Length: 200
Ligand SMILES: Cc1cc2nc3c(=O)[nH]c(=O)nc-3n(C[C@H](O)[C@H](O)[C@H](O)COP(=O)(O)O)c2cc1C
Image 1 (cartoon, rainbow, N blue to C red):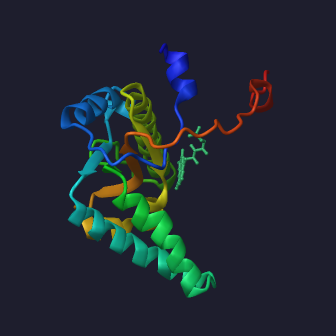
Image 2: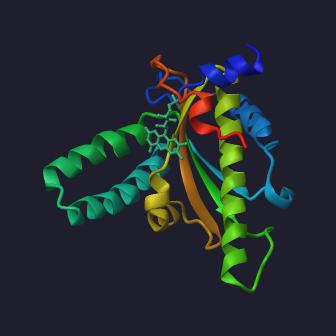
């Protein structure tokens, strides 16, 4: 497949075969992903690789508790909330051969005294991490793997940090579930170029 084919045929894959990903394939994907552009070339991404079922359980438990608390506050009935968490959290994490938690660090980013520039610098780090994740998804697809970007850690950063005992300066941004695809979803529609571009 050429680059266009890889980009266009990548899909978010949420169901995986019960087949482990060889370590060297996973590392070859991360090795490609690290060539993403990043602000100041700071490479502000950090990646927690989870394959141990006990760690997955701990992560799912902490994330599940945080999600349940949010849903109950939103007025979702407890049994409905618990069912959503079972399907969307427990099963997703438990049934994914690899779970990656992609984090952000401001370690090598610039420091500014004012809020406006601190925010811009933080956003540059977020954008850099996103570029890394996109590379990761494309490289995984290119190696015959499926993956899905899951935003849940953003909503419960403290819970993820607790479960994985992450240091203070590491901020969870996303969860990437990965494995050999067990589904072949249709491509969700995309807007035409003319719809999102403004020529001046
Ligand atoms: C920032 C971000 C967060 C996402 N979070 C989730 C998520 O929490 N759960 C999920 O199933 N898919 C999630 N996705 C995947 C999108 O739903 C998916 O990319 C979109 O529907 C287009 O489908 P495609 O990736 O197959 O082209 C996320 C994607 C992005 C970029």
